[in-house]
Image (tube, rainbow, N blue to C red; front, side, top):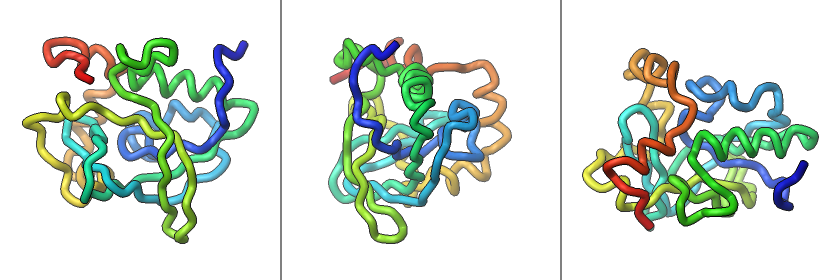
Amino acid sequence: MKRYALAQIPFFVYGTLIPGQPNDHLWRGGIRSVETAVFPNGILYDMGNYPMLVEEEGGVVRGKLISVVNGLYEEILSRLDHLEGYIPDQPSKSSYKRIKREVTTDKGQRSLSWLYIGRQKQAQKRRVIPGGDWVLYAASRRGNIDNWWENIDTVHGLHNGAEGSGT
């Protein structure tokens, strides 16, 4: 049952949802295509064992543009929203915002996509990920990341605890 009508646009992912990263299992055979892409005007922050993208001019975030199989779109969207703590009916209470933004593929094509974006308040005093590339950054820390994600199914509680949800 559809809770809300959505355009079935691709997702730009930049962290643990990238194929080969700890949360790629959430796609469960629903990927139609994957392309390398960049999001301009964003900065990636190290939140411990996952990144947070915050919109900021002057940065570039590297990631993947993932198109989903039509018949699985709603199911996958629900899984991703759960992981990111996004509540469609209450976006102001969500850990991340799911918004539409344009990204550019490595072939130079522009594409409107869904992005999960954090709040600047949550990223304060966190380290900037050099070059906006989580995969390269996480490569040296892979063991720690895999162990941490074994018992986590959402980041929502991490952002609504002591740090607050911000706006």
